Length: 264
Image (tube, rainbow, N blue to C red; front, side, top):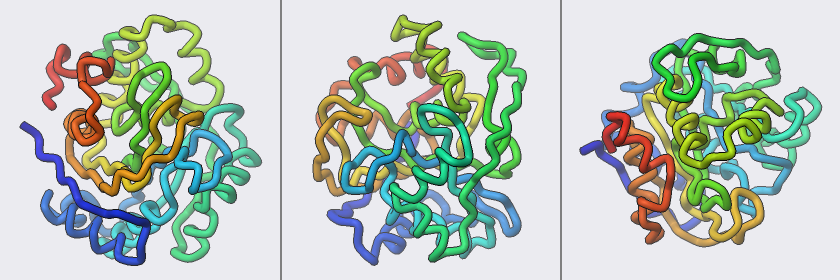
């Protein structure tokens, strides 16, 4: 069984960095995952232009805490995502500002990604796709660490450590995948394909305030009080579902992963 670290964190406080550091220490410490000089892409959830209080996007306090830990390890943190809608520099800047991440970058010196190039990569072992078109910024990174938001999801029941990686697919191409794959089980296997290609060495979930109801954007903020950390994104999602009382057999990505040999 993969290890998932659950840290009680009732609010976005100044102690958040220490809580996150303690959690990562239980998995070997930040220097196990980040080497000096490495470009570390912190793949956040920036679905759309929303404020942190709306619980749609990864909270800036969590992102800042992780940025500072990456810097302590000598890494170069790059914050980014490909939100829904057009993948343009103008759109990214607007979302960075509204979500609080522009301020994080100004305070810490982290880089906000504005590289909107994309590239198609081969993925012959994919079940649903044999090629993936991904953002160039992810390919340019030495390490990709997703920082997801704990939310329920109208289509996929739950969105977390696995589904967040759908955001490495650029812009409106995500909508094309949705149109081409209306079957939920097929789409779930696409998400597992993407996660398997990305191979994140560490996954972190912001469950301090999550979202319940009609997510990923139309639900209601819900106090949960947890940070979840794991080297296994599939296991992290299982643990998060257990935390909120969501039965995993309702979550298509969690069903798909073990069927393909990805242990949780």
